[in-house]
Amino acid sequence: MTISFNYKTVKRPDGTEVKTPSIPILLNGSERFETVALLDSGADISAIPRGVAEILGLDLSGEKTPAFGIGGKVDSVESTVNLTVEKGHEKYSFKIPVKVILGQYDFPILLGRAGFFDKFVISFDQSQEKVFLKRTTARA
Image (tube, rainbow, N blue to C red; front, top):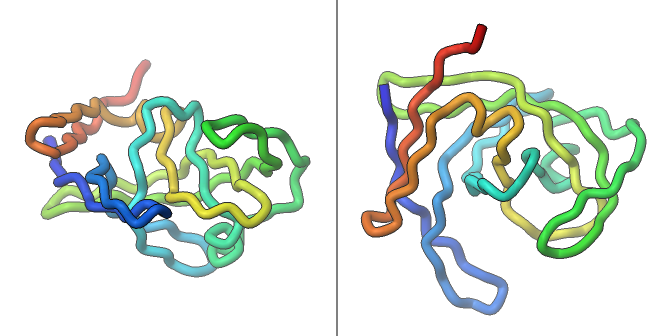
């Protein structure tokens, strides 16, 4: 079954607004955190800010490694988080790898290819400002 989401309006730091292929998600740890995450086909792995990781009680004691993105190189720690995507009668829950971006960076949660994109066939309809997720079957 395929679920669809309308693009979400996001306010940029300069005050302008833009519609993005973002979807509502639920992150589960020691606390539950409902938010909207940006589908980022250019991201190898999902990324979350340190503040969100702390709310969820994620283990941040791992080795610091560099993460590279549009903002350059930043320190990060690899972890995993339980994620749920739900709409109507469809509900998908699984654990995904994430890079927790250390420091005080303000960015939306990014859903990347490893652990998220590989679980769905994802279609973007820019003209209709919609994104479609179809759950894939497990590979043998």
